[in-house]
Amino acid sequence: MAKSTKEFAVLKRSASKIQRAITDAKLLSTDLFSEGLISLPIIEKVNDAVNKTDARMELVTNLLHVASIDPKIFHKLLQVLENHSQLLAAVATEIKEDYGKDYDREMESGNEVGAEVVIRKETPSAVEVAIEKCFLKQAEFYDRCKENHTKIFENTAITKEKIQKKAEDLEAAAKQMSQDFQKQVSEKGNVNPDDFAKQLKELSEKTSLEIQSIMMDNAKKCLALSAMGEPEKDESTSIKEESDIDVHKVTDEVQQTQADQLLDITDLATVFQELTSSQQFNCTDWYQLGLYLGLYERTLKAIEEENKGNLKKCLMECLSSWLKGEDGVRETRGGGSNWISLVAALDTMGQRKVADDIRKKYLL
View 1 (cartoon, one colour):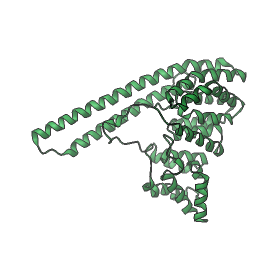
View 2 (tube, rainbow, N blue to C red):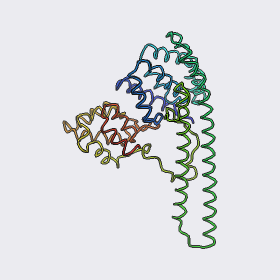
View 3 (cartoon, one colour):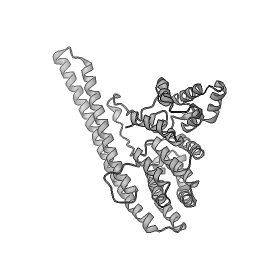
View 4 (cartoon, rainbow, N blue to C red):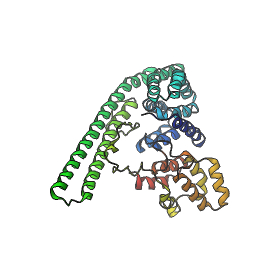
């Protein structure tokens, strides 16, 4: 599970860009979505919630508990919270004071597991103190949160066991298929190896889909719990559980989903066409799009200067830089050059029609 401190630094830089780009919780939900940690229905729910004062506490609770389970987004969450309101600033301050030196020490030594333990241990007490300081009713906001916190980890542990079993089943099945193929070769002599490769690919793809289904089922349960209410059948997810299981150890043939799969420079024409078809995307907004996609201002200014007023060319060069992974846009897990990140950027800019068309075509 270990990831480098450099990746956490990338998240911090990303958080800084985020704060300049759009506001508070609505932006945070978009960014979580771009990292694959929150689903489309939840994006809509969050966008509705931030417009209602009485719903903000539920939103805060959801996001805090996503963070307490997945430390990869923890710094990003805290930086956004600090600029949101007096209450959220207090929550962020208490959390940082509680995990503070212990967390930094673990991260500096490269012990991300230890850092995660610190976060899980300190987050509930930090939330409690912050709420008390802001004179909120602890019974309504914290108690149910604390009670459901344990259930979330229990569900996650069960999910990991299920994924482990699926990976083991895949390995065993692949091994059996290989033995059967070798037997056919020895008995018949002339056997087409493409048939074996096709069967192995189909098995791998089926297992991959089954694992996704297991994770989604767990996520639905976790959402209901993190929302501080009883589980609801129709709720979607705010948590994407990360597994340490590498299903690809048997074969490299398992395909990524179209939504998560990184795009590259060969996809430039497709992405450009999706944005500009029927003149949906205004090319004058190319600079803003570049910022939301994670490109640095110096990169965009260089493009602007080089293409002097040719907006379509500027947009194409902007997309080209993004697809090439410039400015570290591919260093953040779940983000980078993919359809999810593009849709999230367009949603953030208010380009809903273009975002919806791409979403329907590539994400649903």
